[in-house]
Length: 365
Image (tube, rainbow, N blue to C red):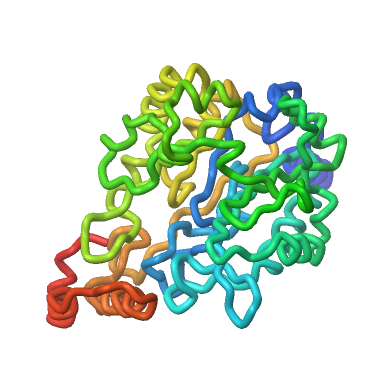
């Protein structure tokens, strides 16, 4: 009598885990919506991790890798490029501070996820300050077998639906901040020709009430919307202190779905429509995805995996993911100041004295 029960349980487990190809980006209700009529949760500096594998690097702004991010509903990932030995690497600020590996490996991880999730459309934004050439970037996409997945705009100004992107096997929208050349590489889109974004240097939740475009500069919200650019809301905070670091201490307030939804709908009123992109740190906290589902009218998401609990440093029950000041929080600050100096920035002598004496532990990271 136990065998039928066991088989029934196995069948139920199979049904629960089966991929629902009728859904697009976690919901059948989104399939017939144009790409620009959907809101996408974004992981700010997606490869820059703060967990045991990175010794809880204070420059990390996500707890989990891109596979976990995408599986949990993230559909926009940003990554900062730096050149090291002539090759593009994923480094947040400086490779001396936090080096998250090669661009090729990151793309291969995304490729593996797309293969297992065939009805999903994702957006990649590369912060290309070193101006890695479009040719080299295309080679990185090709090395991961992603080049054919890149969407090329038709020139009509109209975006396809999610289902059309999926059926055409062009499930990747790629933006570059710099170094683009649409004449030779039309699938690598200039970010600020296609989007406008709110300010990204925010130190208080009150900053989220400012809906005017920060980039590209000189545009009013009305002009930005009229141009067809897609709204991009930056919703992450930095701490006040010697070094610009993510504000981990307020992440539950920042990513709280009710708080997030309230600030986003305020800007939606100013823009005449919902934001296309919402970029957050530590995406799993909040959880931020709750606000995105609400904006999209999604009440029952499918093909989504709940992420694990955020990791803790040590076993003392300290703040989740925070710097362990008991065991040298000022070490992290000294390293951060050293990186600033190596990058040619002027670091006041008083700052060195502050962290050398351990007073830096008083500054919230």
